Image (cartoon, rainbow, N blue to C red; front, top):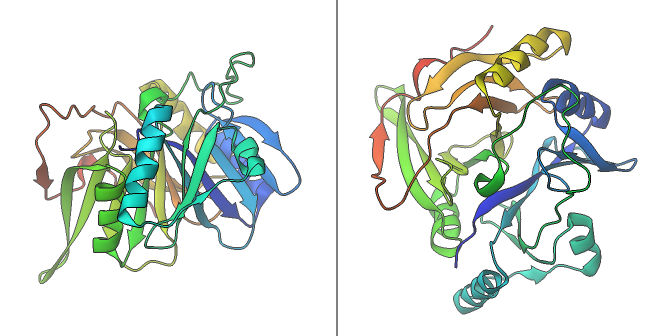
Length: 291
């Protein structure tokens, strides 16, 4: 009775053209279906992994969390019913738009739309082909990547994703803001990806601090770094290696102001042997702020 992966992410953005160039030219995602106010992008054989919709928020607008089986979907519905959690069955139009067989819509305690689904569409007849030459992304059972959300309602948000949806704590990182205050980041997994979700207990102008895409090889990451200047992208953090998931990555600003982490070689979490730990630094090396 838990979700299995982050299937897709939706963003509300004010500049569709800039985002299209960013996602295809810089990150190397493959364009999918689009219209004048919305566009979808592929990372693998799925119909889409990222969607942008025109609007003023310039922030994350929804996430899609995948359940592996029809039986699992029914069990999760039953759990939500038992807990008295409000949700809405998706309309046929929304299910068709998302390309899934069944879907329910609910809202997390911080106001983010959460879509839980089963039976995503695979476009096996149209192979993934990166316009920037990216050899591939690590998706499959590990999903589309991860999101880091800022929230002032940590207790409620934590309870929603862990007790109700089945996310499990991987570890925490303490960031010393001042001699008297340490900010503790919490990292959660729902599959072997070290974290699909991270929570930051802080007020922020946007819900989303950053999202991450994991490329197949270090060369893919290196070539993406080479595209920074060509694509007019602002790099925000240097190449580095995180202390907890061991991801080698760099960060860059999106056209909406929040960051994307572009990485590779993250470790896998196996629940039967994993032990929760606490880290006192975010990175083993690198990840320095760029001017």
